[in-house]
Length: 152
Image: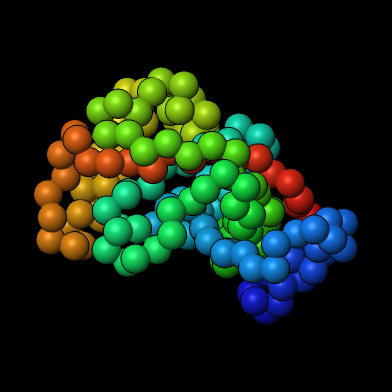
């Protein structure tokens, strides 16, 4: 059913956009069902127009970094497709150089840089523990902006 939801959303998107890429990636925000649901909701409301990820994980998993024009499907905590988004900007900066503007665009909590640093430090520390590495303020962070181009 989850894959059907993803495939259906992609087929509907392709009908209105015949020039859509042939491939896409489907993923959810965060590391829990609750976080994925909350962040997908913020995205659908238009509050969340940016995200940040751990550069080191792309490197270790030999995954392609996001790039301007990348189209993907955002999932909720159940793995159900909620929107198709297009990446509009990608910047790699150290954790301590993430801007207040980026924190605001992520749309989480009170949208301040202080809040962003607190929750993202905890999040990245967990990720680094999983790969037996230490978090520090100079870790590279992939700061990505996006826009919704299709939703249910």
